[in-house]
Structure formats: structure tokens, C-alpha cells
Length: 325
Image 1 (cartoon, rainbow, N blue to C red):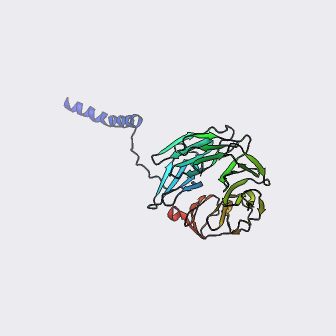
Image 2: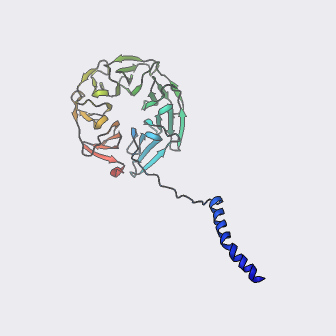
Image 3: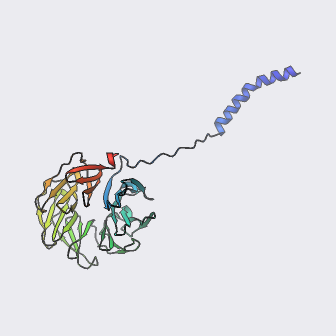
């Protein structure tokens, strides 16, 4: 009897094993705890549109997909910040107290007082709602963008007053001249000015190419724009004369760094001028042939944001993060 039982068990044992394996394959799902992947500091897809801050504290580069790179001036360390919304961040500015404000597509605004990022959406047009630039001017933040968007923000970046213009026009850059007037460069060759701190605006046409940026050094002002256009004023903006830039590439930004005028833009364009009238190319070794959208002067160098980010010292280019990684 025992022999028969053992024989029967031997016959069914292989089928039991096969059935058990089939059950496990069908109903038991293996689980694997994934190891966290380190976030690289920079990625090949990263593009940047603006830079702000102080090299002695922190410098901030605003870019696409909600990315902001921070470089700490104390120890040259880097931090990658990712906003809660992966929108393109077009502009960034810092206040005298170190408050950081970044703006971007769909009217979104992000601010950081050192305790973390907070978000807010400004009431922009539903047709085209990109905020193109933000600046810190005389105790206020100013955010400008598509469809005539102009907003004046409080010093803490919490409250914003809508001072927008009516009309389908993109506002590209904002600056204040030595006499206190506000100036905005816009598309279609339009230059706006305000004598009452943004309550009203008067426009004039300077050709037909979109005007991308302007800057002042005392009574001297320079405007740059698409097609390599350059305009110079020697009387605080009362009149403007066009000058040859030596390039037909779009120029996106212009600054005075304390010694010379610098402008940059598409196709690796980087030009300089001692007087704002006569311009010449700068061709630093290793400078990328892509676009650069913003310049920021520091005491010792000029920082650039674009398809690459880095520092220009004289005519020596250093790509950041260090090593270009």
C-alpha cells in the first residue's frame, strides 16, 4: 500500500511543480526597488534665456522646462532648481535684498526669498501670455511680455499692478534712463517711453525690425534688435540714430559694462563698441556659435546666458558649469 502511494506521488510531483511555476508567472508580480538616479547639473537639452544676481552671493540662470541653475559665489558650487511647472522661464531678476523672481510662459511667476520657491500666475492674455522679461528697477520689479503686458511688482514680489498696453505687441526689454523715464523696446520697431512710472506710454517707430533690448550709460543709450540693427542716442533718448553693427544676425541684448558696450545674439554674434557708434566683432576661443540671449556685467567680467552659459573676461571665454559638463 505504501509503495502504491509513493508511486502515485512520484507521478504527480512534476505536474505540481509545473502548475506552481505557471501560477507564479501568472499571478505573482516581482517587485524591484529602483535606485534613485542622480540628477545631472546640466543636460544637453538645457537652454537659457536670462541671468541675474551677484557673483559675491549667487548668480541665477533661467532656462527652459522650468530649470534654474544657481551658482554660489562663496564656494563656486552649483544647484539645479526645477520649478513645479515645466514651462520656459524667459526672465529672471534679483532685488537689493536678494529676492529672486523668474517669469515665463502663460504668465507664470516664481519667487524665492531663500526659503523655497512660490508660484503665482499673472492675468495675461489667453491669446499669447508669455512674460518675456523681468527687471528690478528703483525698488520695484517690472515684468513685461506679449500682448502689451506690463506689470509693476512690489519689493517682496507678492503684489502686482497691471499697467499693460492695449494691442498685439510683444514687449521685449525695459530700462530706466538717468532722468527717470521708463523705456520699453518692442516688436515692429516700436520704442515706448513713460514719464509717469508706467501709468501711460508713448510710442515711436524706429524702422520695422523688432527692437530687443536697450541700455543707458548716463545720457548715452543704445538699442539693438533683429537683423543686427543698432540705434544710438546721445541725449537721453530724445533722438535716436541708426548705426552699422557689422552683423545681420538678430541681436538680443546690449549692456554697458563700465568700459565698453557689448551686444550679443543669434549665430554666436558678440560685438563691442567704445562709443556706441562703431562696432567690431569679438571672437573668443571656444565661444559657441549658437544664440545668447542675455548679458550681465559684474565687477570683473560679463556673464552670458543662452545655448551655453559662462563668463567673458576681456576676450577670454570660460564656459560654465566648469568644464562645460
